[in-house]
Length: 198
Image (cartoon, rainbow, N blue to C red; front, side, top):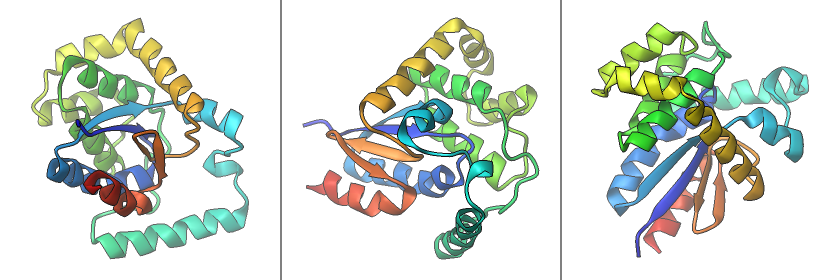
């Protein structure tokens, strides 16, 4: 039976970045396909009780920072705790990932490249030229990706993906959904690994 993971993400999320490389490796080990869905978490939070970072209580924000430090050290990967350009308007980046997905390109690799640029390379992933440079560096057709991203189709697909997330009870990023079971957070990838092995 084919193994397929629906991957609901925010391209502003450090947790999505922290789990991305492990997900890529895991999918490869298990021969699983990953469908990347960069959704609008503002709409998800509105129906699930979530809050954007600036509206969270100070103690929650402080704990988030402590956890980012812990995971950065544990995974031994570069992570800027307070990136120069965070948060960015992730709309265009999301549209480009959707464009890559719909074209059959490596949308998973592109999404991780965007996240790495924001969280490890101090690049502005809300800037069109920066995004196009990253698309090209991933070996993808930047002109075709940009054209699709600018079309109404990209936004319609993002809205549909967001509604799908709401319907499937997704409430946070990253969420990995395998056989209708949600694994929320990069600290749950081990459980996803076990499910894929089962």
